[in-house]
Amino acid sequence: MNGVADYDLTAPRTFQVNSLPAMWSRIRRECPVAWHPHEDTGFWSVSRYDDVVTVYRDTENFTSERGSVLDVLLAGVDPAGGRMLAVTDGAQHRAIRKVMTRFFTPAQLARIAGRILERTRGVVADAVARDTVDFSTDVADRLPIEAICDLMAIPEADRPHLLACNKAALSSDEPDATALDAVSARGEILYYLADLITRRRDDPGDDIVSALTTARVGERPLDDDDLALNCYSLILGGDESTRMSAATGAVAFARHPEQWRRLRAAGAVDPAVEEVLRWSTPSMHFARTATADVEVGGRELRKGDVVALWNTSANFDETQFPDPERFDIDREPNDHVTFGKGKHYCLGALMARLELRCLLEALRGRVESIELVAEPRQVYSNFLFGFSSTPLRLRS
Ligand code: HEM
Image (cartoon, rainbow, N blue to C red; front, side):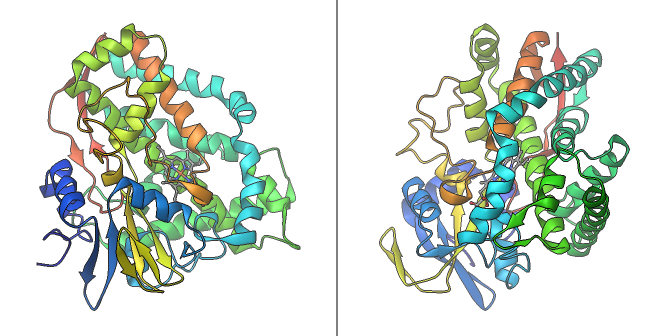
């Protein structure tokens, strides 16, 4: 017995063998804020919506700088802390975020929206032309990496290699993939980015990589390592989670055909995008470290304690989402925590929404019904939720 209500939340297997809604419902009821032992240390597990949001917003008492993912925090301290946006706080965080934010405004995204929709329509048309497809690899894998690479002006020819590395770096399709595989994949991406940064510094364009290389953050420009890390966080954040939510969304519509019929008949796609985001919750958790003794949900946390915020539980908290296990494309309100909350709120949220909107638009224009032809294969991770393989039939 090593975990919260007997569940070991550090083990990817826990998220494969259990019914997740039932597991989280029990945890929220029996031990909503609980100490979870792990080897000779441990962490707090926070599972209710209100507590998760409170900690996300409380930058007085919690920091991201030691790391924001459980595996990293339990192994030590994130070496990117204080340098990469997601694991930087205070003035440095504000300054880096300011440079990047202008590439994610509605006006800026409108510039790439047409390309995203056109590409999505092409990928969907290819998929519909086949009898069955693996939605994960044939559709979802092909879209977000292209959008983020457009933003970074990464040459087309380099993209397949980056995608392969990115998949190996964060999650794994197989339980026997080693930590070394992930580390070497990360090394490959950083090596590629170091080269890209040198090229952009010499010959800047109007892309986000060029903007970072020429920006002054505080009094100084970002050094090469900071630049590579921040570009890397765009690829990581921009690709993986969006791919995951696209495939989980397709599975949701296959399992709830009446919702697909409603989407085809409905006017607006945006509420369905929000429900796909809530339902899929690709980043199952993010984490923080307490910088002071602080109370959360009636429990006393000590300075230095690690805290895991379970988005995947909060998004199904019945106090916030009536009948949470109903996939309902008209759900209103739908204030999910899929993109976090507070100062680290996902920088790419509008872009992810745009990509999902284009996908649902392209699909509903062509596809009458979505059917699962075999069970999807879930990625093996305690951080990411999604499917590495999703065999579907898209009937036009
Ligand atoms: C469905 C897709 C996505 C999901 C579920 C997602 C989820 C999240 C979450 C939960 C956070 C907050 C982390 C924290 O509080 O510690 C975050 C931050 C971030 N995301 Fe996303 N994300 C998605 C898409 C994207 C895209 C498309 C990009 C970029 C193109 C992106 C880039 C980032 C960055 C750079 C941060 C750090 C922001 C900061 O610390 O200020 N994400 N994301």
